[in-house]
Image 1 (tube, rainbow, N blue to C red):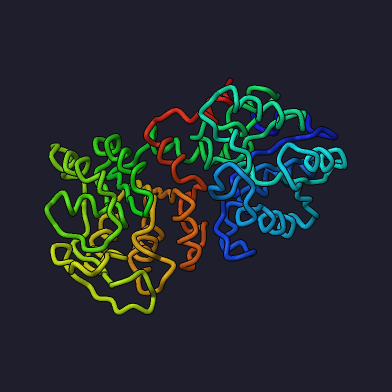
Image 2 (cartoon, rainbow, N blue to C red):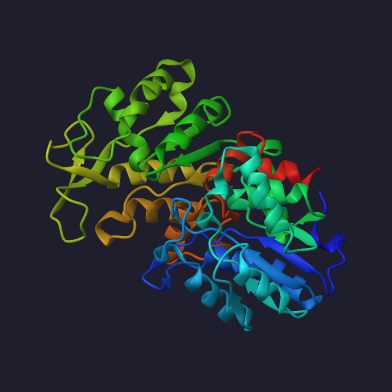
Length: 393
C-alpha cells in the first residue's frame, strides 16, 4: 500500500478523504480529535506544495443539503489548527467547488461541502455512485485516503474515486492499520474486549467473531440490555435493541459464552437527564419506570479488575451516558483501568475517543486511540474494508 511519501504532489491537486464526522454544539466543534488526527497528512501535503482539496461527511443529511449538517464549523476549526485559511465550497461537485479548486494555489486548502448532501455518495447503485466519483475525480490529479473511520463503507469518495485516480494512504490510515493489525497477529493474552455504546447492531454481529478469540468480552452500555433480557431480566425503559435478544440468547447458549461478562448492577433514572433522581440497582431489579444509564459501581470494579490483568485490550463504546456526570463513572472507571494497565490498549470509535477526552484523559495515555468505530471493529474481525482494498490495488 502506497503512502503519500510515494506521491509527487508539488503543484498538483490532491483530493483528501478525511473523516470529519465530529460532534457539534450549534456552530462549535465539541471534540476535534478526528480533525487533529488528520493534521500530519494535511500538513505534509501542504508543506510539499500540494493544492489540497478536503472532502468529508457530517451526520446523515438524507442525500440533500441541510444547513444543520454543513461542514462550515469543521472548516473553521481546521483552519485554526492549520493556521491558514480553509475555503469552504458551497457544494460538492458544482460551480462553487470548481471555482474554489480553480483558484487554489500550492499550499492552499479547499474543503468541499458535506459529501452526503449528494445521495449518490452512499448509493448502493454502482453506476450512480460511479458518476459521482467521476465528478469528484475531475477536481483532482491525485487521491489520498486518510479517513480510517469510513474505510468499511463502499462509498463514492471512499472506494470509487480510488479506482479513478493515482492514490495513496495518508499517515492516519497507515498508523491505524499498523496498530490494529496487532490485535490480529500479535495478541498478548489475556485478551479483553470491552463493548458498549448505543450503536448495538454492528457490535452484536462482531461478538460472533470475537467470542472465540477473546478471553473476556465485557459488555456495558446499551449492548448489555439484549443479554439481560435473554437472561429473563426486565430492563424497564432502557434503550433495548429488541431484535438482538434472540442473537444474545444464541451467544449465551454456546460453550464460549463463559467469555461474556455482563454488568451486575446499573445506575438507573426515570429519564435521560443529569438532574433526574438516580439510584443503583441490581440488573435483576430494574424498576419498570426506570432506564439503565450507566454500569454500577460493582460492575465498574469487576470490569476494571479484568482489564488490569489483561495483556491486550480493545475498547469500543462507552459504558453509559458519559456526557452527563451522574452516568459517567462507568466509562471513567474503564478508561482509568486502561491507563493503569501494562497491556497493549486500543480505544476504538469516535464516541469512545470523545468520551476519554471529555473525561480528562489524554490520548497518549493509551496504546492507541483509533478514529474509527465500525471500521476498527470490522478490521480486528478480519473483515475486508472496501476503502483499504481499493488502496491496495
